[in-house]
Image 1 (cartoon, rainbow, N blue to C red):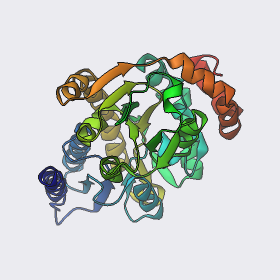
Image 2: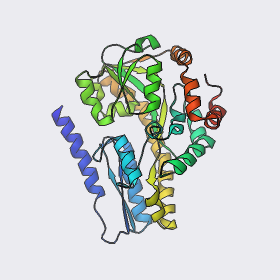
Image 3: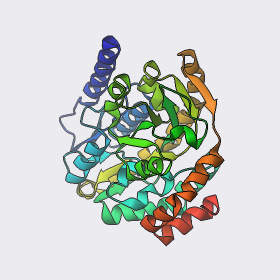
Image 4: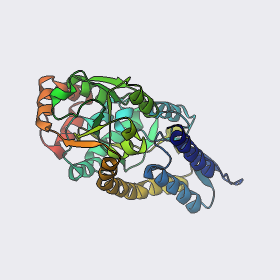
Length: 334
């Protein structure tokens, strides 16, 4: 494993080094950090945005990409972007909900059946409502289109998860995200919040029995080396809000703001297509790596969430406007 992890680190360093080739005449040199391993298509698309910004601005602006937690984990990156230590971050709704609960509205348990419900909501009124709150309350400027992270699945080392009863007492890593922690508490698991870069070792040393992530993140993090079962729960969908520190954003002239926003929003469509392709191929790849897959019974999970008053609790946290806007796209919840 040492060789593998070293190769991942070197790959991340290579991407960052390539992105740090500064032009002497660049007026603006901005940074974005991610926790995702360097080879993941997410980082390659961010690098594409950086290349396009440099080209369209004729070298006046650069965007440097630092993958693989080089600048810190997801919560660290959010904090750094808000303080101005870096200019861009890419938090999920769950991570943002640690400072702004309404951003968890898309990441509640078992609310989106599939992507035909996700994108109309997040590109429509629900996304606009959340963006307005990020701008007003978080000190960040989000781009119009979210980038896809995907539907989350549960992996375990000891037994598969088929119904809610299989989660009882399970030590399960989650991000440090209030919505996910409270979700698994309501499902009677024992969630342990930690950053993505810490997950592999926690699984390897059995600090936790399992974790939950989209399949692309399971593969990118090589969790198949320390997990046996993958249960297709589709319990939460989440995506990335590409955000700029508000002061750094307003420091850009209007023409550069237009260039940056256009490229992030255009490449978002291609990044979403990348994840769609990964969703089709990654399951077979993980099966080839020895993971055992199983389907689940979503009704048993939803029944437990209703009994635990999970939905009622989060309606109170999110507010009636956000809840009503969500139900416009997914139907009655709870």
